[in-house]
Image (tube, rainbow, N blue to C red; front, side, top):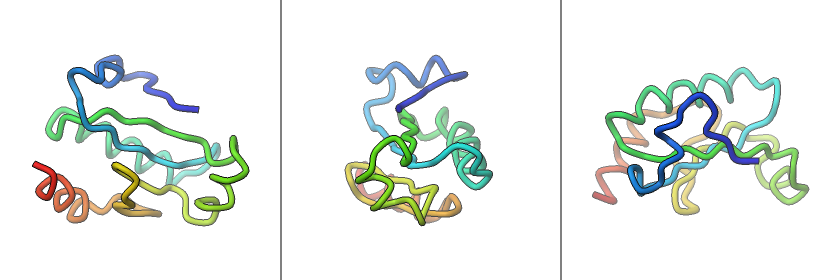
Length: 96
């Protein structure tokens, strides 16, 4: 399930043409930490954030269940467990 709760600007994909996806699960403090850190970066980096619960889909659970949270953009994994600002900046430098 994708969500942009508490961040109405992030729901506007015209404003934020790039979408980052965080695969997470409920009651995961690492997931919540990564999501909070990404939301703080949205105004500077201009991206839409989708949060997907890996437990909502058997294939996602099998693929990402042991690595959550996992941050992806365009199907490319940027980091997992903790937000890696260097890897995120490198990804943005590569695409812009």
